[in-house]
Image 1 (cartoon, helix red, strand yellow):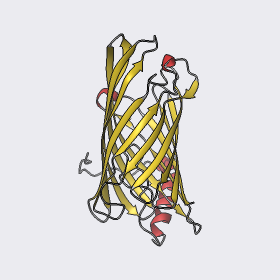
Image 2 (cartoon, one colour):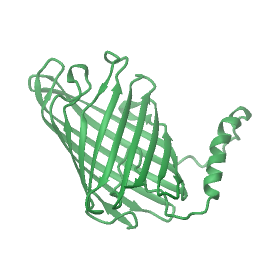
Image 3 (cartoon, one colour):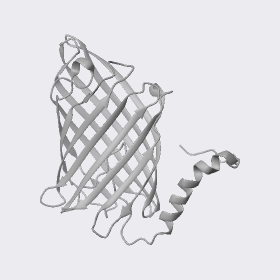
Image 4 (cartoon, rainbow, N blue to C red):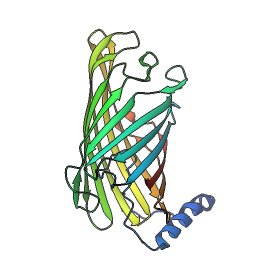
Amino acid sequence: PHPRLLPRPLPHPRLLPRLLPVLLLATSLVAQEAKEGPIQDNSFLVEEAYNQEPGVVQHISTFTRYQESRDWIYTFTQEWPVGGLKHQLSFTLPWQRLGASLDGKQAFGDVALNYRYQLLGDGDAPVAIAPRFSVLLPTGDEKTGYGKGGTGFQVNLPVSFTLSKTFVGHFNAGATHTPRALSPDGDRGFTQDYNLGQSFIWLAAPRFNVMLEYVYTSGETVTGPGRTDRQSASYVSPGIRWAYNFRSGLQIVPGLAVPIGVGTSRGEKAIFLYLSFEHPF
């Protein structure tokens, strides 16, 4: 959404000490000489369409904590190229705590095993497409709401496109099919989940990005024999990320965002933290 074109007051003097570290970081990163191309790391909530380069592995950690429910989830993802740019394998391990909504215990969720194919383009192309297929293993406990209770199959279509020298976008559309999901009471059923996402990235500097993402999810849970209940969620998430490049080839990318609930999720807010390590192997 575009901000209203109205004059805005200067920040309150008490806010300046809080803003100063961010401004200094941005200024420092802008001033650095661009020895390499811009950051093409994963977006936070929307998947980009750039497979890992040959000989480069990436380790990604994310942490999301919701303000209202006090639930949180940590994920660790590792991405490996297979024989070149065309093929990529990865896995995602979720560790989470469902607080007020359930028993408050920490436990694993459903683990994802992912394969992605670089169908079109790469990080230097105006348009890139890299469809992904994932198998979701029922490692989470469905009795406490941490998993589906059955093997799931997910497809996602990420499309990345260049808008200008300083703006890029990523689009996602996907679905998850779980033929034999379980309810907490042990009833089995078929569930179908959907996801949509769109992000716009401002390449403010080669090593500093400003991000705006939107995600929508619609998921089903089994509530009885052959019965399901569908719930949806949608968030707008502004964020920033920056990069540190080392002579060894290591790149570290921290980032943070503030997902804000809209529509049926109105009133919910979260803090999102991101940390990526990418290096040759």
